[in-house]
Amino acid sequence: MDIVTVYKKTRKQFGRYCGHLDVSEPEVIIDIKPNEDVKKKYIKKEPFSTGVQAVPEFSEHYVNTLTHETKEQGMLHLEGGWPKDVDTSKLSSKERYIKKIETNMEDINSFIALRESVEHYLDQNSALDIYQDYFTDSVQDFHSEKPMAKTISVMKDPCVGSKRAVTRISWLPSDGSKIAVAYSNLDFQSFPVKTPTNAYVWDVNNPNEPEVTLLPNSPLVSIKYNPKESYTVAGGCYNGIVSVFDTRKGSEEVLISDLKYSHRDPVYEIHWLQSKSSTFFLTTSTDGQVLTWDTRSMKAPVEAFDLKIPDDKNEYKLQGILGGESLDYDIAYSPTKFMVGTEQGAVISCTRRKNKGTSIDKVYYGHHHHHGPIYSIQRSPFIQKYFMTIGDWTIKIWNEDISNDPIISTKYHDSYLTSCQWSPSRPGVFYTTKMDGTLDVWDYMYKQNKPLLSVRLSDQGLHCLSVYGKYLAVGGRDGATRLLEVSEGLRGEDKQAVLEEKDIIFNMLERESKRERVLIDNRKEAEQNLKRIEGKRKQREENLKNSFSMSINEDDVQEEEALFLDQIKKK
View (cartoon, rainbow, N blue to C red):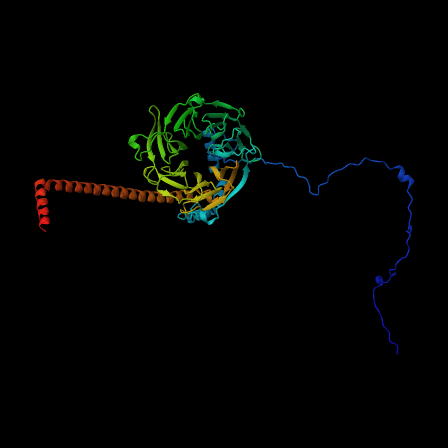
């Protein structure tokens, strides 16, 4: 029997084995000769270099679609449906046609046939009121939706490297399609000599470049659109002068005040006044003046009013002229009243009279006043007797009938507060900005001790804030203006729910006002009791003093002293 060993492997593994050549000389395996026909086509070219990118190239551009504008239009239908052969201007023609219809049997039979179906639907309408409002007693829960503020665009200062902060923002009053932005450097003693003076008007749909560039003589600290003339912009400068621009005529100032009669400090706030000509506006500054201007004659102000409190209203002994830092003027509340927030933390309420000038009505200061300048002040657009102030580290809400103390004060925040503004659509919502770059959204309908929403917008501080409808424009110390859109729950689009919320907020503020009045009465009563006790103590000491002096007789004292000495000698 033969033993057979079988090795199995694939065919591709068969082949010539590797061998080692001992040839020391090179061996030409193949020699390809040049092609003469191809050689004749050879052209010598100088060397050159080129670069190739491995990524596609992009170009920066923007495209805006046209805005689709809609409008509501109604039609009043008084009379119609007559045939063409009927003259509707003649009563006899219409009466003849009516008689003709009444005597036409075909029409009468049609009316009879339709009667049953019409009665059926009329009975349904009687049984079910299709226009009835259900759940009228319920309040819309705005808090059911998560609050949100979404950044839409960022408009950066085109002057790169200028280190200017956004000091004021003003919306175009007619439709909010544009915002005017003022830029300046307000750091103490750090104003660069070559700081640009440009201010800009931005189109909210184009954040890449400004639509109009304003060129004042000095950087603008405040800016405000004219509510009636959308092309007129007033600005308060760093050197105290006031400028007026017409955006139709270009970038230059069309009107400018005389430096001699202007403010001596930066103009921190501007407000247009209600008038037939729409040419008057107010300005305030830390030089302690409130000036009234008329654009028809800008050489000097119409009226100059000093923020000096008269003695009969100076309960807290505020000395000298107070510097104006912020200004509030609400046409819906009163066309003659305005309020000024001062550097010393006091709020001054003033009234403009046609022939008597401006006078001070009240001073809001109290025991719990602000410990620094009031950077922002605004009346509530829904309940005008209440107003809000921002200063130092707190937010305070005041009742104009109570000048001693605010009715609501928040806790002291870790960062300085810079601006505030009420929501124009919901009574209990307002917005604040802080120096740590945070935007806070407060909703007193649901939370009173802390913000409902806090959004960190910048690593640097936020300086100013302006609200228009559902949009917020926030200016920062980095020179950027951020445009945000709030969520539906913060807009207050349900009118019935807004009215109900207004009643709730009004009751809450009235309750706090009543509590504050009780505390003020208790404090006054305690102060009177202390004065009464102190008076009684002084009277008692004086009586004791008088009774002691009347009972002392010098002869008796000498006699007693002699007896005392004799007793000592005997001992």
